[in-house]
Image (cartoon, rainbow over all chains, first blue to last red; front, top):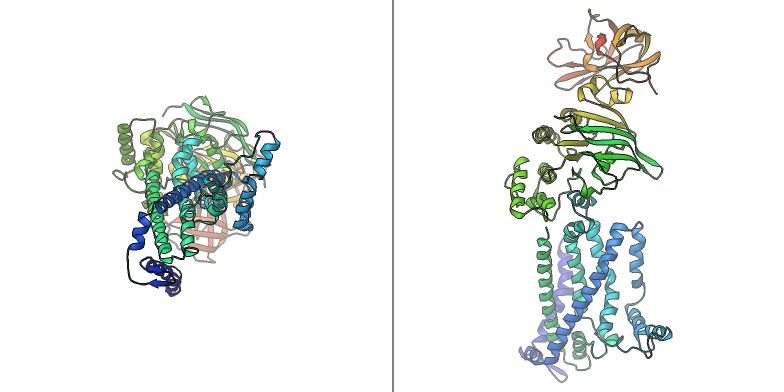
Amino acid sequence: MSAPATLYVGFLVAAPLAILIAYSFWTQTYVTLDKTLTLQNYRDALADPLVRHLLLRSIMIAGAVTAVTVATAYPIAYFIAMKANKKTIWLLLITIPFWSSYLLRVFAWKLILGFNGVMNSALLWMGLIDEPLTFLLYNEFAVVLTLAHAWAPFAILPIYVSLQKIDPSLLEAATDLGNSKFQAFRRVTLPLTIPGIIAACLIIFIPTVGDYVTPSLVGGSDGKMIANLIQVQFGAANNWPLGATLSLMAMLSVGFVAIVLVITGTALGKRIR
Amino acid sequence: MTETNIIKLRGVEKRYGSFTAATGINLELKEGEFFSLLGPSGCGKTTVLRMIAGFQEPSEGHIEIDGVSMDGVPANKRPTNMVFQSYAIFPHLNVGDNVAYGLRGRVAKPEIEERVAEALEMVELGGLQKRGATELSGGQRQRVALARALIMRPKVLLLDEPLSALDKKLREQMQFEMRNLQQSLGITFVMVTHDQYEAMTMSDRIGVMFQGRLMQVDTPTMLYARPCNREIASFIGEMNILPAAVQNEQAETSMTVDMAAFGKIEIEKNPNVTNRAKNIIVGIRPEQLEISPDKPADYPATLQGTVSNVAFYGENVHYHVKTETFEKPISVSVPNYFHTVDFQRDDKVWLGVQGASVIDLGQDKQ
């Protein structure tokens, strides 16, 4: 019975990963591959300050995106789960951005944030600024904003589900035992939604570290991330082994951060009594 | 037990849009009594409890607890604590932290630990502080919910169908335990239940509710012996209801009624009945009817019939006796050790009843 799953995981996850790992120990010699096993790629990557810089920045940006997205998603999820009457309609509305292409949404942000964009035109027209603001686009801020918007539903849904599961009588019990609404939220709702928050964080953080479309479109040179460098290795630079090495390094860093996140998140939740 | 009123409900009504969940509730609960609100589901008993707890505000009327008006006082500021039907045990906290929940931030830590240990001891869960909330059995969850509420030293403990989630054996055991606990603590317990036996075995007094109205408030004994109308008579235990005509009202407290084929009999006037006319209904408990093969002597009212159904319950036997006069068969219950003659289906039998066993139920509204 588990055969289809084994095949699926084997072909679609394990095999590609194995190929990637193999590549990372090989060397590109112009057009051919030298398949002698070597750690040279790792040495090169670790020695390169650009790699470290981009990796760190990717994690920082992904962290910022995760924090902003989850912080804005929580109140929305809370509203839908606890207050809204027509939950289905609200959930449908939240998924509407998915009806258009992700690329189009990134371009839309370009139009909004650009030098002659919607934002600057509006501010100029209102007379609030004399010349267009340049800090809106082509930097980390633009990347965080665009991604936070794009990921919102991915954060709202798991948090919504965890809120939905809370038995309302638990909150009544907290009130009955003397808690104000806010205390009941802090001591009951919040700890019970920590699994949802952690899920939302992972869903957003992991793919964001590896995102390269958004940084290349709205990030400018300040907003470049590790995936942009990886893309170059597999493309213009034609150095697949180095690209594979960088990919694995990014993967390990993300895995490490994710594990730390899960452990600290769970531990923090346990401390609330 | 002092005679102070701890809770007063005056003209309390609760409406949801056009639906009236409870209306005209006037009730005074004595300090230290075990009071049950009994009624079928949807009768408004839980609404009344939730209004006392402060989860719902009355649409009309006022609630006083310990002499203080509860108008506008939120649930977290009321001297009441509640045991929820689902027990509402916090799943992310262990037993100790669940019980300590209401004390955190108000009482010093060593005192919290002491009181938690004491409360768990009281509900016979001593030493289980570290047990996870999800590792508890139904009965243990109920005990944790009790300890968590009682640790707050409430003036009134509210219990919403506290035993409905337990199996029969455990329920019976908990009935006695809760009763003992209530008596040793001297706290007023207000329990909502749809189970008449639960209400009867545990309570000092019972308030029976039907369709949002409080119909009768009385002790279990009086409720069983002197129900005020047909609904309560048939809700509390089993009751044979027969039409009767009042012949003469000789005295203040008694009257002669004509129970059709059963004949005339002198019965006591039910003080709980408010509307009495010429044609009334009377009730006879199945266990208070005599059943015998020959016409029983010493019974002022007798009637012949045919056994139409026999049900063996172990401790007693139920017979359904079909008579020519009455449309519904008459139900008779006989203790197992007591009867020497086993009746079979289609046996001809005689029924007999004493005047003291015939309950005046007043004019029938139906």
